[in-house]
Image (tube, rainbow, N blue to C red):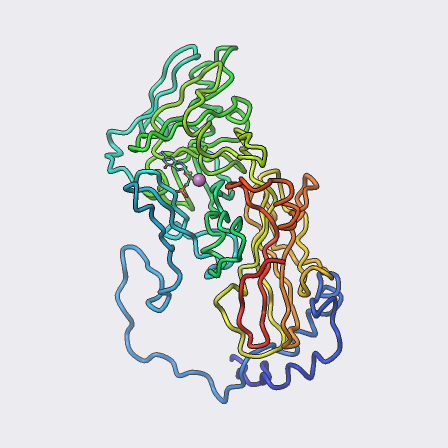
Length: 430
Ligand SMILES: Nc1nc2c(c(=O)[nH]1)N[C@H]1C(S)=C(S)[C@@H](COP(=O)(O)O)O[C@H]1N2
Ligand SMILES: [Mo]
């Protein structure tokens, strides 16, 4: 028999009394302290559960019928992508993953962010094929049936647009939810055929140093990828979280290039040309380059930097009372694994180490969590990630200093949310 709720949960009113003694820097209960008994302390206090007299009545009528394809609960109306389109170019724009509505590290397929330069092409997968040609022993063409006969691999990884978080270059903090500022990143399990296997089938000419990948949508997105990366870990992906790719994410086949900026993850793949030199396409040169303060554009800035963002709380939310909350967020790095995430609740004066959700995977979203006893005063929360390459997520001031005033891509500075006395959460710069 289940225990009645009242015996395991205590009323909210007792919470502050039990946490009257300080628990860590600015109320943060760090990893070590949590493991030493802070967890038990929290479990006993029952946080914000309400006492109830009895269990809810069970449903006494048959429920709704089966469905061919499941949908979220009807009340989950805010857990949706947020679309922002370019009015000047048809099909150009983005839709953002609502990071502040999600938990864990895997983005549901219907909420994976989208970035199209010219819309989602209407294509017939039975007519689809990809050609491997150029500096190869033989030119080969693979249709879906052929691709399915090759050995597949799965890997969990993040995909992030180079332009993610770029509203934070703005001199004033834009007020928007975590996912509407930072949600051009998603995490999936991608499955497909390693590109190295297909390149091996075609046979590489020793002069083949670049793979020029081309999509078949109207935008003419073509990029040049160094051969070393293509032979290392690039997937010719057919599946996303166990099901066939979604049309908006490249169905039937896309490249998944672990840790590298979104643009090189070519969707609706149609051609891979082996070449001695990069193509220097529009997307290798004009777009997705990093303009420095002196006006020089750095090209091929492929690897995504170390980054973290608190997703709960998120701007726009309001906490109803002081007391214990769990601060939760995501961290990732294109250079490897997330080694640690520190959280500050006093604007960066003191830091405590957050708990990382296992398994912590290479070039994948990593969930961090840390309990915080909020005393009801105005405080500023921020997180700072360190990766396995020893890179530390920079402060906003350090990033601006390093990049100068012309930067547009690769914004990876620490992000700060203020909790006001009223409990209202806002985006602030430190
Ligand atoms: N063919 C094609 N591939 C493309 C794009 C595109 O517009 N066309 N956009 C690129 C960009 S800029 C990004 S960030 C990622 C986005 O992938 P997603 O829409 O699956 O999130 O796809 C990349 N691949
Ligand atoms: Mo992108």
